[in-house]
Length: 116
Length: 119
Image (cartoon, rainbow over all chains, first blue to last red):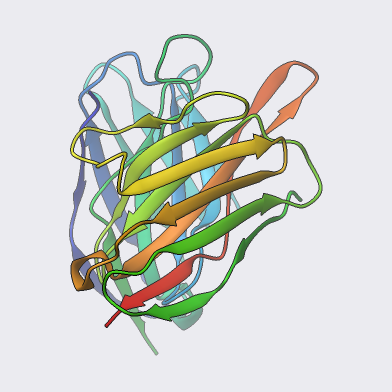
Protein backbone atom coordinates (compact mmCIF):
# COMPACT_ATOMS: atom_id res chain seq x y z
CA UNK A 1 0.00 0.00 0.00
CA UNK A 2 0.85 3.65 -0.08
CA UNK A 3 3.21 5.18 2.46
CA UNK A 4 3.53 8.92 2.93
CA UNK A 5 6.37 10.50 4.87
CA UNK A 6 6.12 14.14 5.98
CA UNK A 7 8.81 16.49 7.28
CA UNK A 8 9.38 18.39 9.44
CA UNK A 9 7.17 17.34 12.33
CA UNK A 10 7.33 20.84 13.80
CA UNK A 11 8.10 24.15 12.13
CA UNK A 12 8.43 27.49 13.82
CA UNK A 13 8.70 30.70 11.78
CA UNK A 14 8.42 34.44 12.28
CA UNK A 15 5.45 36.27 10.85
CA UNK A 16 6.16 37.22 7.26
CA UNK A 17 8.63 34.41 6.66
CA UNK A 18 7.99 31.48 4.34
CA UNK A 19 7.25 27.94 5.45
CA UNK A 20 7.94 24.78 3.48
CA UNK A 21 6.66 21.32 4.30
CA UNK A 22 7.77 18.29 2.31
CA UNK A 23 6.24 14.89 1.67
CA UNK A 24 7.32 11.77 -0.15
CA UNK A 25 5.11 8.95 -1.31
CA UNK A 26 5.81 5.38 -2.31
CA UNK A 27 3.06 4.34 -4.74
CA UNK A 28 3.84 5.56 -8.24
CA UNK A 29 0.16 5.05 -9.12
CA UNK A 30 -0.94 7.81 -6.73
CA UNK A 31 -2.25 10.72 -8.76
CA UNK A 32 -3.91 13.10 -6.34
CA UNK A 33 -2.13 15.01 -3.57
CA UNK A 34 -4.15 17.22 -1.24
CA UNK A 35 -2.95 19.32 1.66
CA UNK A 36 -5.07 19.83 4.75
CA UNK A 37 -4.99 22.31 7.59
CA UNK A 38 -6.37 21.13 10.91
CA UNK A 39 -6.95 23.29 13.94
CA UNK A 40 -7.20 21.71 17.35
CA UNK A 41 -10.34 19.61 17.74
CA UNK A 42 -11.65 20.49 14.29
CA UNK A 43 -12.02 18.79 10.96
CA UNK A 44 -9.25 18.85 8.34
CA UNK A 45 -9.79 21.61 5.81
CA UNK A 46 -8.52 21.27 2.27
CA UNK A 47 -6.23 24.19 1.48
CA UNK A 48 -4.81 23.15 -1.86
CA UNK A 49 -4.45 20.05 -3.97
CA UNK A 50 -2.56 18.95 -7.05
CA UNK A 51 -3.06 16.23 -9.58
CA UNK A 52 -0.28 14.23 -11.15
CA UNK A 53 -0.60 15.89 -14.54
CA UNK A 54 0.46 19.22 -13.05
CA UNK A 55 3.84 20.19 -11.62
CA UNK A 56 2.86 23.26 -9.65
CA UNK A 57 -0.24 25.01 -8.42
CA UNK A 58 -0.62 28.30 -6.62
CA UNK A 59 -3.44 29.93 -4.70
CA UNK A 60 -2.55 33.33 -3.27
CA UNK A 61 0.03 32.71 -0.51
CA UNK A 62 -0.07 28.94 -0.86
CA UNK A 63 1.61 26.84 -3.50
CA UNK A 64 2.23 23.16 -4.02
CA UNK A 65 4.87 21.54 -6.20
CA UNK A 66 4.98 17.95 -7.36
CA UNK A 67 7.92 15.93 -8.64
CA UNK A 68 6.50 12.66 -9.95
CA UNK A 69 9.88 11.21 -10.82
CA UNK A 70 11.21 11.66 -7.32
CA UNK A 71 7.78 10.98 -5.78
CA UNK A 72 7.73 14.03 -3.60
CA UNK A 73 5.57 17.09 -3.21
CA UNK A 74 5.85 20.20 -1.13
CA UNK A 75 3.67 22.90 0.40
CA UNK A 76 4.92 26.46 0.35
CA UNK A 77 3.32 29.19 2.43
CA UNK A 78 4.62 32.70 1.87
CA UNK A 79 4.14 35.78 4.04
CA UNK A 80 3.04 33.65 6.95
CA UNK A 81 0.56 35.03 9.47
CA UNK A 82 -0.21 33.93 13.05
CA UNK A 83 -3.53 32.52 11.85
CA UNK A 84 -1.60 30.09 9.67
CA UNK A 85 -0.58 28.30 12.88
CA UNK A 86 -2.12 24.82 12.79
CA UNK A 87 -1.29 21.24 11.95
CA UNK A 88 -0.78 20.58 8.25
CA UNK A 89 -1.19 17.17 6.66
CA UNK A 90 -0.22 16.02 3.22
CA UNK A 91 -1.97 13.04 1.67
CA UNK A 92 -1.81 10.87 -1.40
CA UNK A 93 -4.52 9.00 -3.22
CA UNK A 94 -5.15 7.03 -6.36
CA UNK A 95 -8.42 8.12 -7.87
CA UNK A 96 -10.41 6.54 -10.68
CA UNK A 97 -10.16 2.82 -11.05
CA UNK A 98 -8.79 0.00 -8.95
CA UNK A 99 -9.87 -1.26 -5.56
CA UNK A 100 -8.13 1.57 -3.71
CA UNK A 101 -10.20 4.25 -5.31
CA UNK A 102 -10.30 7.39 -3.25
CA UNK A 103 -8.42 6.19 -0.18
CA UNK A 104 -6.31 8.93 1.31
CA UNK A 105 -3.03 8.05 2.98
CA UNK A 106 -1.93 10.84 5.27
CA UNK A 107 1.49 12.02 6.25
CA UNK A 108 2.38 12.33 9.92
CA UNK A 109 1.56 16.01 10.12
CA UNK A 110 3.52 19.21 10.71
CA UNK A 111 2.78 21.55 13.59
CA UNK A 112 3.34 25.03 12.18
CA UNK A 113 3.74 27.90 14.62
CA UNK A 114 3.93 31.43 13.30
CA UNK A 115 5.25 33.89 15.86
CA UNK A 116 4.02 37.49 15.68
CA UNK B 1 -19.45 23.57 -0.72
CA UNK B 2 -20.47 20.09 0.36
CA UNK B 3 -21.36 19.54 4.01
CA UNK B 4 -20.78 16.43 6.08
CA UNK B 5 -22.12 16.21 9.60
CA UNK B 6 -21.41 13.85 12.45
CA UNK B 7 -23.41 13.03 15.53
CA UNK B 8 -22.68 13.10 18.36
CA UNK B 9 -19.79 15.54 18.55
CA UNK B 10 -18.77 14.19 21.93
CA UNK B 11 -19.70 11.02 23.79
CA UNK B 12 -18.62 9.48 27.05
CA UNK B 13 -19.48 5.88 27.68
CA UNK B 14 -18.65 3.18 30.15
CA UNK B 15 -16.34 0.32 29.35
CA UNK B 16 -18.22 -2.61 27.83
CA UNK B 17 -21.01 -0.58 26.26
CA UNK B 18 -21.52 0.17 22.56
CA UNK B 19 -21.57 3.57 20.91
CA UNK B 20 -22.98 4.53 17.52
CA UNK B 21 -21.62 7.46 15.53
CA UNK B 22 -23.52 8.83 12.55
CA UNK B 23 -22.03 10.45 9.47
CA UNK B 24 -24.35 12.28 7.09
CA UNK B 25 -23.81 14.01 3.79
CA UNK B 26 -26.25 16.89 4.02
CA UNK B 27 -26.43 18.25 0.50
CA UNK B 28 -25.15 15.49 -1.71
CA UNK B 29 -25.28 11.74 -2.12
CA UNK B 30 -22.24 9.74 -1.15
CA UNK B 31 -21.81 6.20 -2.39
CA UNK B 32 -18.49 6.00 -0.58
CA UNK B 33 -17.63 7.25 2.88
CA UNK B 34 -14.50 6.76 4.91
CA UNK B 35 -13.95 6.41 8.63
CA UNK B 36 -10.74 7.66 10.23
CA UNK B 37 -9.36 7.55 13.71
CA UNK B 38 -7.07 10.21 15.09
CA UNK B 39 -5.13 10.11 18.35
CA UNK B 40 -3.99 13.35 19.99
CA UNK B 41 -1.23 15.04 18.03
CA UNK B 42 -1.24 12.22 15.53
CA UNK B 43 -2.26 11.77 11.94
CA UNK B 44 -5.53 10.42 10.57
CA UNK B 45 -5.54 6.66 10.19
CA UNK B 46 -8.03 5.16 7.77
CA UNK B 47 -10.12 2.50 9.47
CA UNK B 48 -12.50 1.45 6.73
CA UNK B 49 -14.22 2.37 3.50
CA UNK B 50 -17.99 2.39 3.75
CA UNK B 51 -19.85 1.48 0.56
CA UNK B 52 -23.55 2.12 0.17
CA UNK B 53 -25.45 -1.14 -0.11
CA UNK B 54 -22.48 -3.42 0.45
CA UNK B 55 -20.05 -4.48 3.13
CA UNK B 56 -17.41 -2.11 4.35
CA UNK B 57 -13.78 -2.66 3.46
CA UNK B 58 -11.58 -2.60 6.53
CA UNK B 59 -7.93 -1.65 6.69
CA UNK B 60 -5.41 -4.14 7.95
CA UNK B 61 -5.42 -4.40 11.72
CA UNK B 62 -8.91 -2.98 12.20
CA UNK B 63 -11.30 -5.40 13.88
CA UNK B 64 -14.46 -5.53 11.80
CA UNK B 65 -16.44 -7.16 14.61
CA UNK B 66 -15.51 -4.36 16.96
CA UNK B 67 -16.04 -1.45 14.59
CA UNK B 68 -19.31 -2.16 12.82
CA UNK B 69 -20.02 -0.02 9.78
CA UNK B 70 -23.35 0.31 8.07
CA UNK B 71 -24.00 2.42 4.97
CA UNK B 72 -27.70 1.90 4.46
CA UNK B 73 -28.42 4.98 2.40
CA UNK B 74 -26.66 7.40 0.09
CA UNK B 75 -26.50 10.01 2.83
CA UNK B 76 -25.81 8.06 6.00
CA UNK B 77 -23.04 5.84 7.29
CA UNK B 78 -22.79 4.67 10.89
CA UNK B 79 -19.86 3.43 12.92
CA UNK B 80 -20.66 1.39 16.01
CA UNK B 81 -17.89 0.77 18.50
CA UNK B 82 -18.90 -2.41 20.26
CA UNK B 83 -17.83 -3.40 23.76
CA UNK B 84 -15.84 -0.22 24.05
CA UNK B 85 -12.67 -0.09 26.12
CA UNK B 86 -10.60 2.87 27.28
CA UNK B 87 -8.09 2.25 24.49
CA UNK B 88 -10.90 2.96 21.99
CA UNK B 89 -10.99 6.54 23.22
CA UNK B 90 -10.13 8.68 20.23
CA UNK B 91 -11.31 11.26 17.72
CA UNK B 92 -13.32 9.58 14.96
CA UNK B 93 -13.78 11.44 11.68
CA UNK B 94 -15.75 10.48 8.61
CA UNK B 95 -15.42 11.79 5.08
CA UNK B 96 -17.25 11.48 1.80
CA UNK B 97 -16.72 11.99 -1.88
CA UNK B 98 -19.30 13.95 -3.79
CA UNK B 99 -20.30 12.24 -6.99
CA UNK B 100 -20.82 14.64 -9.89
CA UNK B 101 -21.83 13.78 -13.40
CA UNK B 102 -20.56 10.20 -13.04
CA UNK B 103 -17.13 11.51 -12.33
CA UNK B 104 -16.35 11.68 -8.64
CA UNK B 105 -14.91 14.86 -7.31
CA UNK B 106 -11.36 14.35 -6.16
CA UNK B 107 -12.05 16.19 -2.94
CA UNK B 108 -13.07 14.45 0.22
CA UNK B 109 -15.32 16.41 2.55
CA UNK B 110 -14.71 15.74 6.22
CA UNK B 111 -17.16 15.63 9.07
CA UNK B 112 -16.45 17.64 12.24
CA UNK B 113 -15.41 14.54 14.15
CA UNK B 114 -16.66 12.72 17.24
CA UNK B 115 -14.66 12.70 20.45
CA UNK B 116 -15.18 9.33 22.15
CA UNK B 117 -14.12 8.85 25.75
CA UNK B 118 -14.49 5.42 27.31
CA UNK B 119 -14.30 5.36 31.10
